[in-house]
Image (cartoon, rainbow over all chains, first blue to last red; front, side):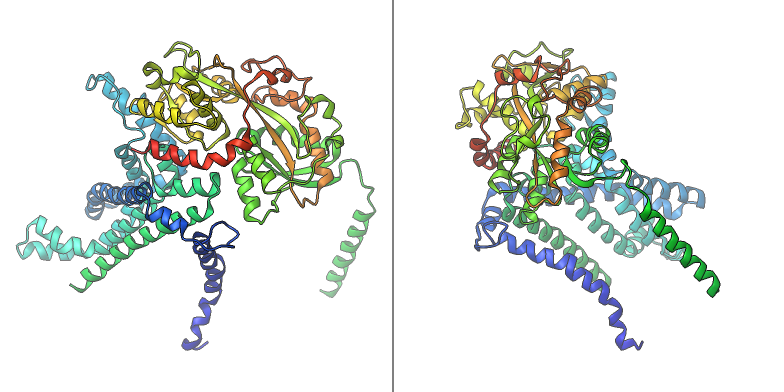
Length: 276
Length: 342
């Protein structure tokens, strides 16, 4: 096959995407613009309900905020660990990598319920605090935003750590020596040499963690509880309990658009940095 | 090579002829069907008890599709009214939705050989009752006095142990209706409920998805919740400190029903499936450990935590009219979301 005909190799996947991804998505968009799932009558009611209602707007903001804060928290833990991995010997490297992948090997349901055991009123953290006398009453952790972010940080950590380790691993150690020999402090080397070169991995990690945390239906509903309103559980509720499919579709598209917008912004940052 | 393949072809043909000549024994399936079943306890119980009984009595093989009641309706709706299974199992709310959406075949109770063992009215023109649920208050006796009624849930010493769940499930909906009644509301007027909830909300121990409640109770996050006797018995059997309290206004009860899906190709097998489900041996096995169903067969005695001697007592329990509840429920769900949001 000539190089010009090579595009045909992509046909099967393109066709599958068209059938099983794009057409349901178009159906979703059509449903959001109708009065019910039969698509007989067009209506903007669902979109008015999403965009014009302060409760739904707040849910959008809560969801984006949760994604952003989880990205920051995973960065806080992943960057030092990835730097350690970069300079570590082969044995320690293996241990760090294993520890990074380990959470992926347990089911998300199990991980989420384990966090109830840790964060609960009679959970590990509160029992420890109470027995050491640091507090006299249990601190509310479960069903709070900080508790949820803490749990998501552990759950999403591999998505940040693995791309970061990969991109730091590609840095030639000679560059660090060169920077030091030219008189740069360790901090300056980190800022001017390591960070720019790690940026693609960092942005990939941030995008993955953001998309995963802001759509983490199980963790949000089980650890976050009923007092924190996020889009995924509203979508589920409208689709499966209330049977208001147009509203469910509009909420689902809003969630997708918000996550895509953040992903696009992050990738734009990456492109801009690459040109500097 | 040619010789080999000829010999293979010959033996294969003989094998086929031999298989066709075998007499159809009693073990051969008279049919097969698919039934929706609630995930978790129901799925486990029906696979272990009902499926073998159906195979033995009627030679019918059943495949189960684990789906919650609302998911069964949603699936049938998504498939333009034709469910991808033969039998629904539903709570009263989704049952009414299914009737409104015309998702069921007309049901002929006279085709059930065990019909006489059901209380009057348990098999009708849309389906048959196969189990009951009794809903009341579950509490941790080590942490509090036994609550007397629904109104106690709003008292500060109880509220700080209380786990709330919304109108998303049948047991949640009827419990909240009963709580509304205890503070001067009714099925038509939920305002007093939301007002009372607003007052205790800063103190309540948790507001959670229904499926998360047993776990929260087991972990001690909450010590008080509204639930069914099944959950209480199950948690108790796992060593959790939990007791069922019948509210002074009476425990609420509702039936779980089975229905034949519209357009089903396995109607005979579906009737046999429902008939076997309500038969005395199956109901008796399901009412015991580890399944703890509330039986609907009058020959079977309910378990220790179920506050009744026989299903006939169910008439004295608080019941609800879902044709009135269903139209209002989306509004209540939305309102609950907003009231709970921080």
